[in-house]
Image 1 (spheres, one colour):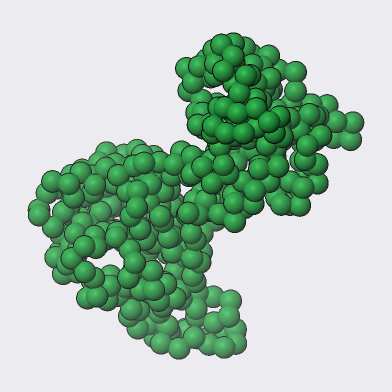
Image 2 (cartoon, one colour; image 1 turned 30 degrees about the vertical axis):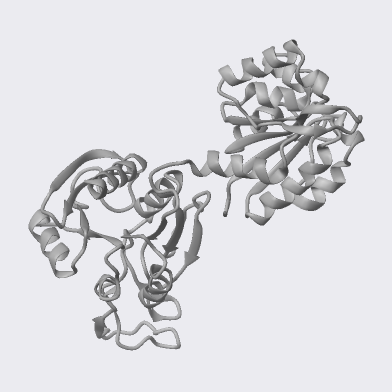
Length: 400
């Protein structure tokens, strides 16, 4: 399971099971997550910071006030940075600190300051784990919305036997994936989304393109990932950060986008064509820069490949295909025509001439038309919210 670009802060406190957290770190890095390790001073007695620095290629933080660093609000930066915080191992001492709002270390301060989800992997002697005070602190954290990995039952390093063994790295990794990917309605599904413009070269320095920013497609990909899907995003040239947890395929022109979509489509359950590929390209792209002259310049344009038309010719009955239709007049009529001609399941129509809609804006206003003839208008809102409502409609309609 990929966690591409997901930001995970791994807190390591002072227990013998700290060595297992090195294995967990390796698993997270292999899943393409970004991992920042913060250790307590006690944890460094069991595993050195160098171990985690070698695995993550990031400096490990231990001290609240290191002598060689600017630290004014570093703990707040750490608290805001990750998508999730994981404490492995979680000692009785650290659990007690956070459960009671006590912040004697950098790690405890980060956890107390964060608004992100926290997963704890308790690890301690069975006598400590079953102590009513410790159980009371664990329950406090649960009531605060924190998650607890189940402890194992077995022999301890101290030779005693009972509950308190830290969950295995594989179990903690699964908890992280479940929390980040969610158990949403798209879990187990593969979603393919296209976004952004395409560029068709005129010469080495000029190209034909459009005003698409890619924001709508990126929002749809991010929402699909949050709903549990495994997402591939084929994107033209955009100035956007990669969505967390999404596989990105970068392309330049319409032909490249067509090939990337065809390659990924065979395994996809859903395709959403939110990109704005070029409708035309030059009949011949010059290999050298065209020099400016006094005469008019005539460029012959020819149609590009129709990605959607080609894709629907190879689709199966189990695949859902969603197209986008940008219209400046007769919106609904032209959108329905495209829906029928290209044999789509849904068409999402928007008009860039409407206020707060269309290209290079943070908001949009769309109308969804299904192949059954149902029409659903979604009022202007942020593109993240529009993406959420589009997926909500598609999923609910598919269930019906």
